[in-house]
Length: 191
Image (tube, rainbow, N blue to C red):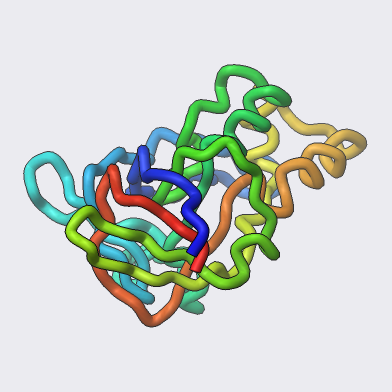
């Protein structure tokens, strides 16, 4: 296993981050909620709230407005090094976690899908291991790109920004048969 880094942020999306009708859809990170623990399964993620209740992420198959009907968009991961790249390009509004990934890992490295093809292992301090498949990149969209730029995205510049954000810069989709708990401070490795 190759160690990547430590989990520094866990979060869930309580509702959709993109709202409105195309082509006027907008991105708003307000529904993102930071949590200290996640329960993850092939169905998605649940976040442990400060009152000790579990909140269903919109990408969990049990959420009434699920964005994960096919079971391939339940959990996502991002890296602080990717946020450094996005902040260099788009400015200070690109705070760590603003793209809505469930798990953020501290590492300066930039990863591509091929780098993570063997899957990821989350290692708890008690020795527990949670293995997750890396299914795909989290492809960027016009609403997120417009939000990152702080303005409406014109077609002539959209393609350039989408290409920059694609390939894993905006994160990765995870899945697999494993289930378990993830906490801030857990370490992450490539399997």
